[in-house]
Image (cartoon, rainbow, N blue to C red; front, side, top):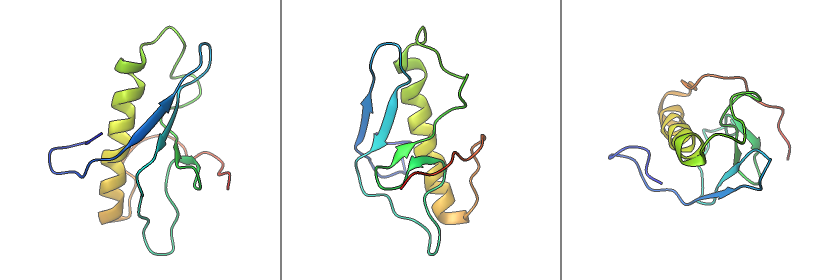
Length: 98
């Protein structure tokens, strides 16, 4: 996945089981800012992305229209965060698991 023409490409894994929320993980190495951890992830070790609020997605939605663009948007905001130190995406940071 490449969030913009000037971005690097990332290998992303998406897992979905009927009736559950899709899980998106960046397989590629993600850098962090000195002294900071990755923003908007459920798990730093596994790099599981926090893409939406709890009620923003339901099983009737198409993953191609929701999860895929949300993942690209997360990567875009991640690249901006690396440069500026500010997370320009909306939402609340989830509690972090190892």
